[in-house]
Length: 212
Ligand SMILES: [Zn+2]
Ligand SMILES: [Zn+2]
Image: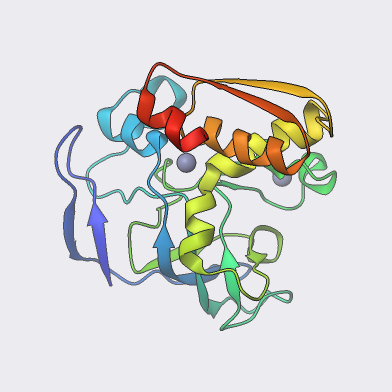
């Protein structure tokens, strides 16, 4: 397959042929149709996150916001099948620890950061391997395209969890977003959908236009 391969900090990615991934017994391979580009990719590419253990080495593939169709499944996979239209979360859980079993696989005890850790190659590629596929893959409803899903990326889930699950934002609440970047603009949309009165704050006119 072809992939956009990391070569060195701050250097252009190199589009080249690499080996096709094979699924683990409980994993899958997804044919990538779209993948978001994120500030986190930029930080990893710049080498900002070695203190977090998220420092790509030459040959690594970035990209953590993909959607596409399941291409292959391992023999132990039961819930997803070849051809399913899916999104891949950016935090991959093992599906078996206490946190995964209580709905918090984003903080799994054996969490893998897709596209940011050496053992979790990312989706700036034609195919991406997904471990523990029954737990991690999210089937998409009819009418949601891979491009739309990739556009939601990690920014939408981050904002949604904060507003809907943590802040319990609801109709009539007042809500101020300081910084209308990817997560901020997602927060504007989600807060509006929840019925809140939204105020967007930013120093950049173009971002305020987006927020409006
Ligand atoms: Zn992201
Ligand atoms: Zn877990």
